[in-house]
Length: 457
Ligand SMILES: Cc1cc2nc3c(=O)[nH]c(=O)nc-3n(C[C@H](O)[C@H](O)[C@H](O)COP(=O)(O)OP(=O)(O)OC[C@H]3O[C@@H](n4cnc5c(N)ncnc54)[C@H](O)[C@@H]3O)c2cc1C
Image (cartoon, rainbow, N blue to C red; front, side):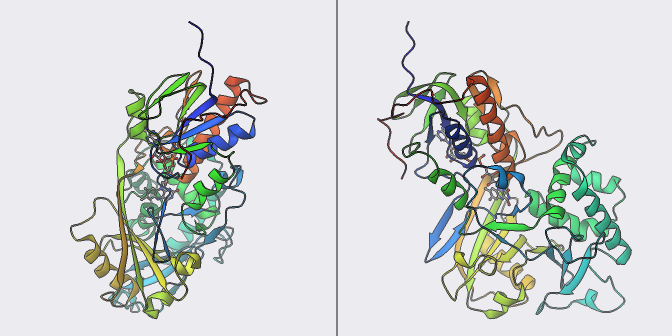
């Protein structure tokens, strides 16, 4: 039989940030691509809901200015990020104090080599532990802080490949084996890593936890200005018109063809699966499906100035685990574009299965964290994602192969680390493998790729 004419060089399944960034790299190299997306919109997990002028992310987004792929991904050059205040605010025993990483950590003001705990959260209630003679800070005394600061400084300077060569075990076990005092783990490292990895039990691979600490110590926590959707939006904007087709569910794939539920078949020279892990395994049985960490994000607004000002632009972590909220921020202070003028947006993240009546439980907890009544706060949205973040339990291969066969490739956060950085990096690797296999140096196909498919909304 004659081969059917190719309609497009590469079909990419899934218009999350992995699929879109791979499309960017391929089209820049002259390879025609069609990105097929089952949902009515592009962006995948990085979507932003608009409610009464608020921009509400599904995800409790924490990026780091040190994520290399934010700089390396073509199409994201125009991405603006809004930085949190240096370090984090830790709430413990009724007190909140700022922990700054060592100097160099994205411009933090802490003394070089020491974790610096500087001040209580204005307005936070003071418990017994705040009185003289009791533990001075959530992470312990001056010696503990100096040790922790030195360890963070060292990890910031450690090359990634050296971290990946270390023995691997659950992060909680690794911290205990390294002799880190329990008060430092519980007061600082557990709440920080829980927030960065969406894993309050610290069951994540110690290598991935070290990479997260490295990113924290060498950069600043930040969010995309305008909401999580700005990343996929910028990536999609840079693609040739008609490349992204939404509302197209792919039902099967091979090296030279994809079938769709309602739009027939598309012939191509290669297929890149850029879906989430579960959808990838449905299309290619045999691909591993990891466990997932469920995440719930609750958005509130209030006209109470106490909440608006007390936390400033900080990320507030609960070291007490005194309620469902793992971390919270007055996001409109960090990124004013997320709320209408004069309104406050408070976004809080619950890790694990949410409790019954999650909004009430969150409000009670937030009243302790912000030191103010939350009874009159208005709930804007509760977003629950049961399969939010692929778990990275040891052994975790964060360079999982992206080339399955010549002509069949897979990328997404489940092939790397379960982060924006991981999704983008896996796409970078997949696009390089495709270009190497196609021997691509110029356009292989010039016709309108998929004229029968609907265009992106
Ligand atoms: C609640 C939550 C909190 C998070 N917090 C953070 C954080 O703080 N920091 C961080 O770095 N990361 C965080 N993440 C993770 C980050 O959002 C993801 O790693 C990243 O968005 C994954 O992108 P992706 O392109 O790999 O996958 P996705 O965004 O899942 O994209 C896959 C796309 O494939 C489409 N698709 C699936 N099946 C088909 C099919 N058959 N046909 C066509 N299309 C299909 C889907 O509709 C989807 O659009 C969080 C995620 C969630 C949900």
